[in-house]
Length: 65
Ligand SMILES: [Zn+2]
Image 1 (cartoon, protein in one colour):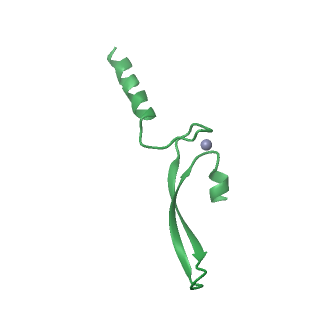
Image 2: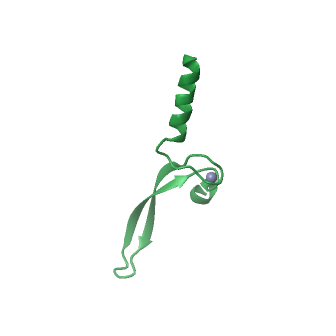
Image 3: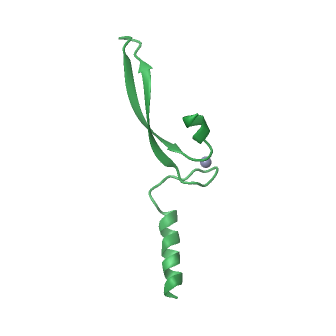
């Protein structure tokens, strides 16, 4: 019985973790920091923009490819 309870607790933890889950594949997103370069229209200088993106099966190729 103790084992069953532990397992249930684990399940609950997994479904209530802090990660966001993809509505399409159900996998939890892996947060990755992307750094994109973009040119400023005003100053024509290049600058880098940091962005956190959630990656799962559905968009891995899109983002990393
Ligand atoms: Zn997905």
